Image (cartoon, rainbow, N blue to C red; front, side, top):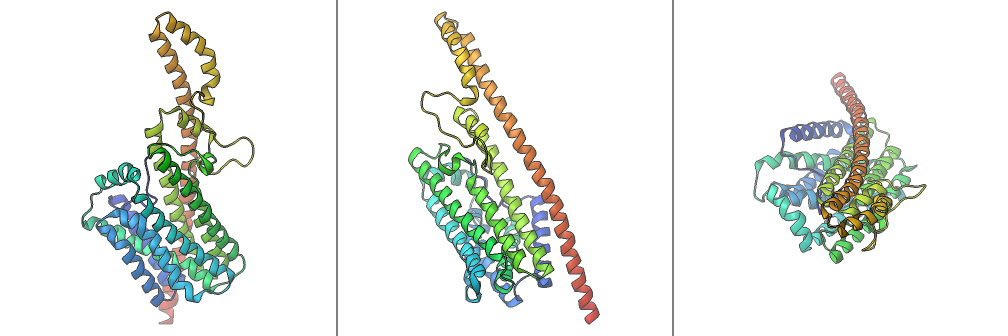
Length: 383
């Protein structure tokens, strides 16, 4: 099955520019008082760099293991400062995220089907071995990973208030994500890596793991904004969580494209796309997807199949198999058009999300620049 990484490698000029701009802005916000004390921040950056540094040799180690290990290190560094339910809940969420990411990836890397379908092709595109072109991505990733500490710092040192709600939401989303990952892993282990998982939570959403990833970052952001009293910390929290959410939405779109290429001719997949939302499950009305039995037809073309089936059989009996095949192709084309229409609707929704993201990002950058400018002016006047 096609697998899209949440964090793409930074090997193209455009991605290097984006990574440099994002990491530079994050560094400015951290320097302007948006994060932990500089001694603590230096320890966090060092830990993040150590976790991601293997990525200069093998991107898989940074993208799959380093990210989770970095958040786990942050939880360990802030654990002695935890006070109250809010900070403990958020620390638990960070620690669980790191543990789940590393443990689950290690489990997948030991699965032959995953190695053959995902890991081998990925390493074919980006072979293992030291490459200086990966270093900017590692450094930018370490800065951005370090900026996640601002959420923890805001909750640990700030107001309790509504932070507990966001922290609890982040922790709950991780537990549901772990369930979704376990369901998919068990399904593929039993039925094979080439089979599309459409059971359990995957029958309600085509990407429940990505949905939970979005809810995790939204919960962390809510907790940070509720606890902080610093404009720089709020701006950095918005920037960091906004980039994380943008990456998840991008990974979801890439995964959809890969799945359509791999399963586009499978009737079950076409029916699955038509019935099951991309991310958010339907709260009202009919939703979900029930896999068909061996003799069942796709619901989207069931009535059409019922109408033409007697004609097809008659044509076959009359040795006009060519015409019957053409009629069967018409049935397939009808379903394919429905799938394409659904994909176009999802693409339009993604474009709207991108527009909203660009608008929000512009506002965040403007706010961050204003904070940085005021800091520099204050520093100059004080000097």
